[in-house]
Length: 407
Image (cartoon, rainbow, N blue to C red; front, top):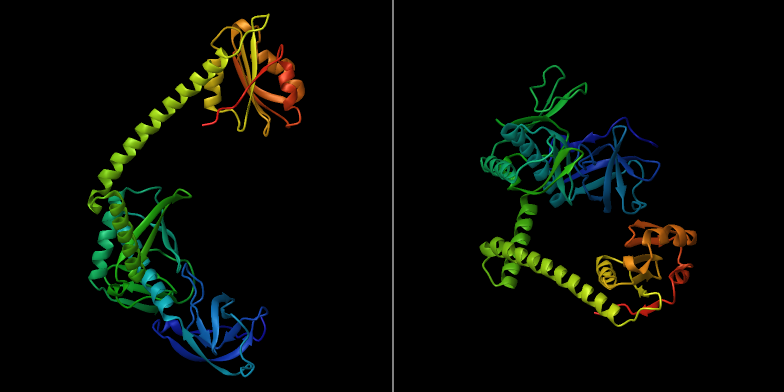
């Protein structure tokens, strides 16, 4: 750090609503960030995202803290008229700041109510412009428990509890929701009658200013429950978006929004039934095609009917069904190969005299084939595709080609 003071006076500690201020430029960091003697810009700290705004007419894109000094990252160099020692006008992006204040105070209230209502302790928080989350020391929660928590929090928001900030000497700090081990004076944010927490962030002055709080998605992270939430105008925008989605979905299905759950459940069950029926029909069709292909061929002098089938994808369930049906008739031997991957499937009828498992081990393995199966069917893959043409030569006689199905 170059020309940096021992610390920067943090104006937001005294007034979180301060939007404009003046400060002296006293230096630059090694990477070109501006250092001021005082600032209203909040740095990324304590789970809360940093402020943005302008400084000397230049955009402030980020604010960082290093060794007690706040660094103002600028979108471009300051005008040449501003040298070290100059006084700069600072302006906070208030819409962003107030949004973060709402969410940070909302998180304090959410954590306090989660502990009081369900005994959930808060492990970590993230307060950002894109998302806000809190992690609780529980592996999961029911929808009913989350709904009860959301309702309780919004009730306390409507009660307009005062939110105050005070600094206490180390031995005079009140009982806190979560004890801290740091030494020295302690900055405590109090929601009257509800919560007291050590915090260096920015907060609204009344729970009413949070507006409202809506819980969003929840997931298990590291054996803990992470819950997303939105407050204020962000919550209003979220509600409007969800309402629009419901209206559009209802219009598409020609029903009322409150009928969507029942209708969607019915359509889900119908799709599952149709999917099951389609799989059964697909198996029947593959089997029919396999039998039809076998009947179109004749057996050789040894009573065998050997064939090879080139396919565009690795042999799956449909090809297994086709091959099984092909080999129902006496003497059937079918090799299915995907030339692009080297994957193959060999099915045989016992009367053909071809043991598929032995064929794999004794004849295909020397070509680099690996796989497994039974005497009636094996599947595997060649190490490369250069040997796929040689697989057919391993079958007795001259295998007849069978074209892949085109649906």
